[in-house]
Amino acid sequence: MRIGATYTAAPMQVHLSPQPPNETSAELLCVGLFAGEELPDWLADVPGAGDVRSGFKKLTMLRPERPSRVLVVGLGAEEEFDTERARVAASFGIRQASAYGAATLAWAVPGGGASAAAGLTSGSIMSAYSFDRFKTSTDDDDGDEHEGQPDDGVTDLRLHGLEGDELATAEEIVPVARISAAGANRARDLQNLPANVCDPAYLADRAREIAASSPLLEAEVLEPARMEELGMGGLLSVGAGSAKDPLLIALRYSGDPGGETLGIVGKAVSFDTGGISLKPAGTMYEMKMDMSGGAAALEATAAIAELELPINLLTVVPTVENMPDGAATRPGDVITQFNGMTVEVNNTDAEGRLILADALTWCAREGADRIVDLATLTGAVVVALGSTHAAVISNDDDWAGQVADAGSIVGELTWRLPLHQEYRDLMNGTIADLTNSAPKRKAGTITAAEFLQEFVEDTTWAHIDIAGTAWDVGRAYVGRGPSGFGVRLLVELARKLADSRADE
Image 1 (cartoon, rainbow, N blue to C red):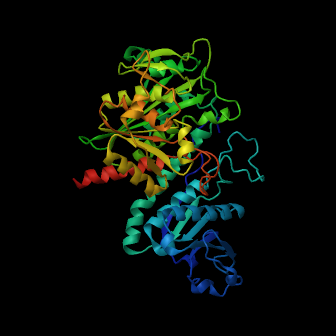
Image 2: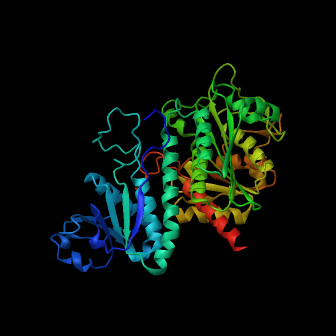
Image 3: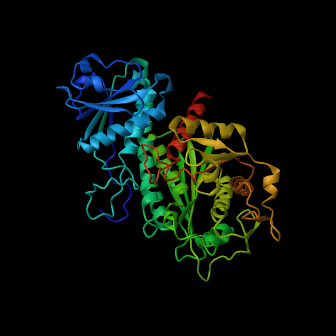
């Protein structure tokens, strides 16, 4: 395997099985148990059945004659069970399967519901993720989960107990859950790659690879000479201190001729030193993941194309390395963005908004009818919302609601923050139209969004600040490493838009 190859693990296959759970041939069967619920008859007399507890996250291993291993997973109160709890429960199945070296895993779908089946699917696939391509030995018994979950051993997931309408719905949504979770894992791969591998040129190659996977996709990459012609001062200024060229990557997906176009913009700073406004050294290594928005945008597009959703996409990824050298932009320099506005660069570590500004304007002018952007943009959002919610800020109430609804379905939660003229006034420049960093430390996430709003050309737009949710979330099915946040949200958003278009 070549160093830096894109996601190489075989995708987990998911089967909706008509067999009763106790007839499965899987090496491990998981049975969920709600509070107050009795074990199924075929497990009631198995030795150890009296030890079973139904509290959420309580686990009991039973050993009937067939199947030989049954993990009873406590689900807590049935009224509190949702797709997120299904995703969490799925992680316990993957951990136990990994411990036994099991390649096949089955679930008796709790309640026989399609949404639970989808949650088990995405939770299992994301829990099985691991990243070990730079290790000369893959034997790792130290339990360190920083780079993902242990051992990607399960290749076959079987879901039992779906019937009738729930089975029909599961046949529709489980493939979506499988493909979008695999896309999230590919994004996690990109996040995990070091910056000496995953640089702007690498991301451009990944975009071309995605484009080659579907006849409905085409890729375009704008290089510095073209940016100079267009006047993309944001991208050029941030990249001025690096030996690696800044690029503007675009993917066009044509799934609905004559229909509206959804614009997806993802920030991809392949490494962010802060430029001359240098970051502290202690956690700078994490800044290889300052391209998380771009990774999500690329891999969501790949998933949408694989699903062949009837929608048009224009995915734009501005990518650059932010480095300090003799050619780097200095604090106090004035640049001109693609839309002609001038900006005082008072903090070279507030670089993400400068490259997004050019990308947003280009996306709007290239025909996007509505835009959503994702970016690890501000540390302030971590203070405000932690790692539970990403911030969403929008110029349209309905669009903000659609983004939030898509996120809630897949467990990628958002919380809306406001726009207001007083916040906008904080971004006024002294000798230029705007500053990229407000002089007062007020509402940092909102003022960054106010800056971006100046570049969307009156297009319906939502901005998602994922700085708190892109890594170290700590949820059971993503661990402490990269989360791939945004891929599943974008796929669900595109799916809902395609469905609404079909209903017109």
